[in-house]
Amino acid sequence: MENGKGFEQYLEENSLGWSQKCKIMEGIVNGLKNIHEKNLCLRYFNPQKILIDEFNNAKVCIFTNFGQESNVVYLAPEILLDKGIEGDARASDIYSIGMILYKIIFEKEPFFNIRNKSQLGKKIINGDRPPFIRDIPPLLKELITKCWNGIPSNRPIINELVDFFLNPKRYEFIVGNISDEIKQMVKQVSPEQSSNILEQATSRTLNYCMNFFF
Image 1 (spheres, rainbow, N blue to C red):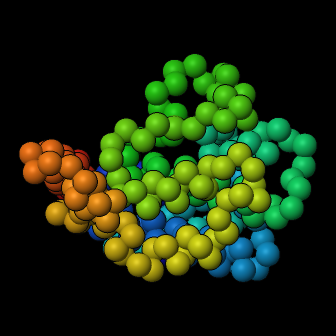
Image 2 (image 1 turned 180 degrees about the vertical axis):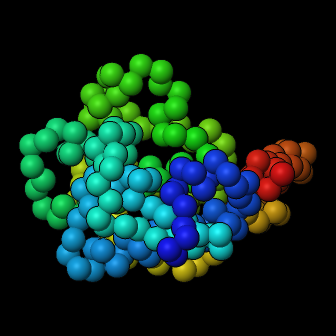
């Protein structure tokens, strides 16, 4: 990893497929796990603390100081309030990693749609979060949303993120995978309506793949 590049530089220089992005996300999650297991907290966790090598292996660095407080988009609301952290301080890192996962998935800075950054800290404190600009696997979207919870104790702990990425079925794109909920809907409508429901469900799944693989 000595030859690893900074997170931002690596994303700019490489066109990443979905599997490559997942490998990087898993590496970052495991890197943060190693830190949290030592009862340490980064507090200002952001892309400047991440290195990635040519094989998409990610490493989280503890002792990088440059730029650690400069980008408000990765700071948890309780950090922005600067009133001290009640409970487990590591929860602030979980909020930040949710933003980092967003950056990897969409290749855009969180809150890229907000031009006036001067009021962004206040917006984050009041509950504003970045928009999901494309469909992504629902369980992954749910996980990221939980990481962004305004109440630190309601966020998942790092082991929950590690467990999530141990099961690829939770975050892979599966064409033709129809949920039980949709199957139940199909049983309750006419044949014509059921065809429309199935067509729309399959189309959404195909759109996932089109957005991220091509």
